[in-house]
Image 1 (spheres, rainbow, N blue to C red):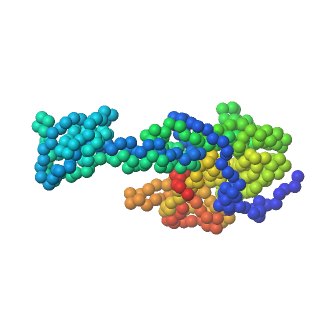
Image 2 (image 1 turned 135 degrees about the vertical axis):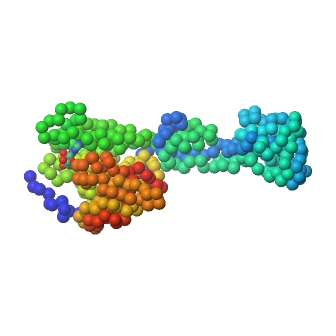
Image 3 (image 1 turned 180 degrees about the vertical axis):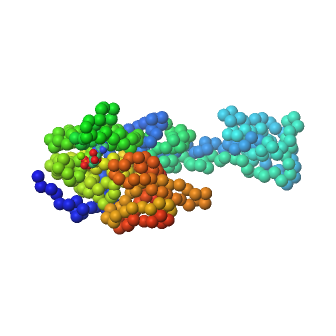
Length: 416
Ligand code: AMP
Ligand code: MG
């Protein structure tokens, strides 16, 4: 077998270009489903949602107090009114208020016709049915006006939005009980490697436990995805080829780990060249150089590296934005901040580094970060301890402690 040329001299695609290439190739899945609110959390709206009613539905009181018709009243002077009824939340006062009349009213209760002001109960004194209002009463206050939040026909939520718990409450408050969402993206993944033992089984001599499938299973935990773990496969060209071909007929996306590099047991690239197309292979990212992106027919393919930290980092940086796009979500990006790094960082120029760090915030609001420990792409303990990546540009060299660096918290996304 001939060895491919030294990978270090091959062209490595900058990560931004890799993401742009993927973005240009993909579009959201076609197909939608109607879901009731109680099954829609985390799904992507395919259609915008418009208001069916004004909100608030009626003019209502925002306080407990008295609703009055202030026509002819001089609020500079104290004044007295007869209380002629009550408006309860859910049980409105049915008549109109004529000038000089007032009623007892509670928070959320509908204002009767003719009422134009609410005076809170703490400001008045009550003698039987007579209510004494103080001098300098503020009129026209404490009323939530119908339609002040939104009007019938207004846009409530745009298409491509991921439905949050807040959105579900918002839609329910507007009387919307059903939404149209993108169908789930069907994703299958498997790991490759002769040396893999499934966790829970005795570790065979020279083997490692297959951790990648468990990390992927967690990383793919999103209501927009329907995921299938296809298991672990040996480094066997024909077996892997058949597995990929069969899976391509059933899923929107296939993700493999391992076997994507240039070793003699790394078959993924050659198989893809035979049964599909590779759009790019190898990116200028550390961890994570060998990453293949391509297609088998219309199925999107990601061949991730084998090293566990590389799997996680390439998933987060490359695969996840693509899956979000397929799921119909509007583009988001990960929040990046500047933090002062309190430890030395080792770096050789060449690839963009995603070192694992621990980010903290000082009392004055400034951020500090330290290295989370050993940075090998097989070291899961430090990425487990970390809460952010420290991102170092490709050309950057080692940095002494004290420098300000770019960090990316693991879990914060912002609108793009
Ligand atoms: P490869 O990309 O197949 O050359 O694998 C690179 C390194 O990652 C090797 O040390 C593998 O043993 C390790 N590796 C590959 N797949 C897995 C996996 N599923 N779980 C844990 N380690 C793996
Ligand atoms: Mg391997």
